[in-house]
Image (tube, rainbow, N blue to C red; front, side):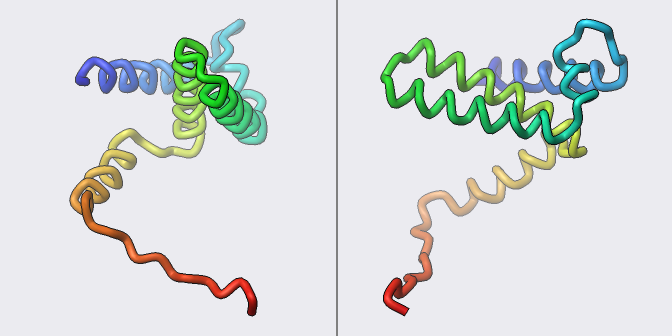
Length: 111
């Protein structure tokens, strides 16, 4: 599992570098130039494509769409100043609660 963490960290660092480098022909640079609306549009598109691939039950397609979603989410994170450490802190807090049954507020739909 460490290799996936390394891959995500490497992708994040590459995205950071591309944001600052403004290389011609770089898709990542293009996304930053277009701004948050374009980035979020891609996150939404990739999320939907992942759901459809999973629904279709084609593992290779689903894995590819998961990777696309992770990449575009990382671009959004960099754009918004969200670090991997920010995400890790929240995941660590949630892991402490693992196994605890969450109590949900019951809504009366008749009112």
